[in-house]
Amino acid sequence: MKITGGQWKGRNIKVPRNIRPTTSRSKEVLFALIEPWISGSVVIDLFCGSGALGLESLSRGAVHVFFVDRSNQSLATVRDNIDVMGVADSCTVIHGDAFNIMRKLASHGHRVNMILADPPYDPRLTQRIARMTVETDILAPEGILAVEYRKGETVADYDGLHIIKSRLIGETGLVIWRQE
Image (cartoon, rainbow, N blue to C red; front, side, top):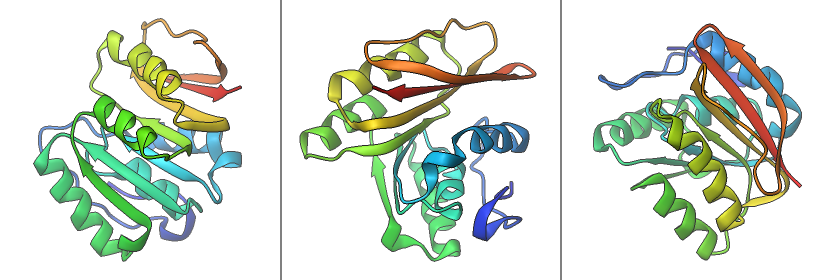
């Protein structure tokens, strides 16, 4: 897998076995949609897998990424990828359940500009991510929540999160909400 844009465009990153990585095409579309919000942002990469979304964010100008996953194998791969890119000072790697970690970060006063999530395809997870984003108040005003989901899943506005962009790429959907 390769970084698709920014200062590390074309650099390879490792991908752990047994995960469904975000395709290069989906990443290109996602980052074209969220480009105006990346520079200077603090990001959470939920269900981070290889860390591709978070590393792509750093490559394009984000200042810090929280990488969150409950798989030790995934987090070992993320750490390797961070080391290869030499950006350990801009990264925090957290082991645990995505929703518990969102609560914990928010309870410690963290507010982020962007949450990127490529969860396992499960129609309940997309709305649960949106609900937890609102409940924890972890997004800064005008912050962005971007979620990849399976085509056919219903996505809608959610309590202060309004869909500003969405796209279908084959069997994959991308939805971007903005915090009002």
